[in-house]
Image (cartoon, rainbow, N blue to C red; front, side, top):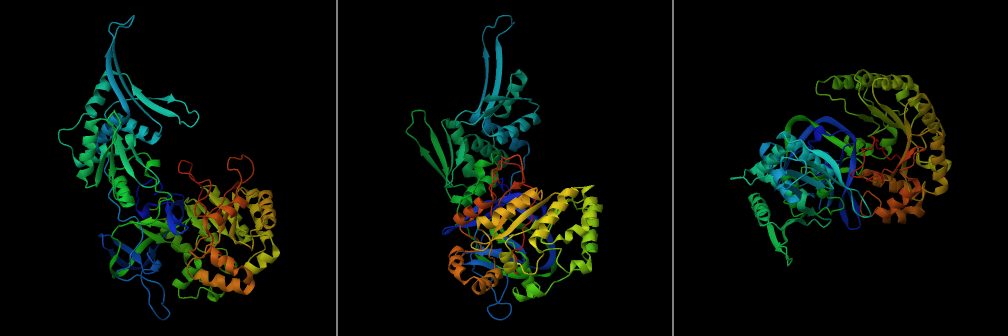
Length: 607
């Protein structure tokens, strides 16, 4: 997850922050992204066992990143099922298996407070004459930090032992210095309790040791962009306990003594990203910025070779997600998520012309949806429609499935949204308004261009872009928040300022509550289809695209930044629509910022 912790995939929700990867130069690097969709399906399952003991339960169509690119779980070397696939000995990429998180029980809490307060706190009792007082006894406990997460955790853990503290501003921000917040108490009984809590234990348990390491790391630790994890201090007792706790969990620790007269000594944990994450997961420090792996290269010495691939009996319910980067990190390896054209091949169709001519209609989807929404386990997660393929394709006019889908979402008060290319969504405006009376609902229209020539060349069978803009305006007038997604943005085809500015202005005039964009992704089968179209329609652009997408499905960072500048405006602006750019990581997506609203991805249809 984006906070450095782990979570079962079944518990993920749309909008959750997590790590994916992006390619920069010769390396693929970890990048923050968000969950755009979450779903489950029942499929035949396979168990993939790795050298380090990890067992992955996945479908045969799932893809993992290996040292030789993306590979499906199963496939063939010849025939219709020919595709890159795993074999025994394939080496998966990722940081390696995750360690179990600690339980925040009494021992852990005491260990954490001991490490944090001994590392960064102040505690003392004094006696001096004070006019008008019967005695001069003063008792003080104070803990001051720039990172509020550790301070809030300490305050909560202290309340568990009946120590109430008051929060105050210790130092205001100025220049390059951040503001410092502190908690304190002057009650004698409370200060005595703090002393008792942070006393060195006679025999430290595993849980106390994990808490202590988390606390001393929050107070005195660091893990910079190069992944060097260090804990420094001058107190021999603190250093001794820290070293013993690290070795208790078999961390390869180096003691680095400095020539400082104050005796400053550093304990360094070796092992790179794999051991960094094992430390974070094992101990669970509170400060999020210290746990960041953003920008780190996806390379590891973990034992991720495939030992076996075996089919399991029957079918299983499997969860999957869509993210902004198109991938995610689960069980220590990099997993891929797919969109509509690869789904067509999963159903036995061709990703090229069959995708244009064959539409698979699940006529029982309203009934299935109601059954799923009525489950006692359903927690009313956000349902983002249009994340795999458009629910308002032309056959919807015949089958009329969406009204019943909106009704099911309304009756269950399930937050929802839809991304579509079709103004047909206006037919269901009364249903959307009924949903809005019970929960949140939104509708975004995908509009890649207003340029007539570019539109007819890339989307010849879709509704006119102007009709889509009118739908955005009507939805907003009716009270349904509606935005515009400019997707896909294709260099040399629809990215010229004179093409984008009219669309941006028209979207603003239509009252779009958000304007986003997605650069062209060329995943899997889509790559061959697109390059075939490009050679036919724009042969002069083939060398450019071969260079841009030589290393994978995404354009280089410099190109993504150039495209972002065409759409992005000041995120602090208080007027007009919220304009963002959904690449692998939106510019406004910051680790310390508010969560972004769920935004569904769009299959990058070119025909």
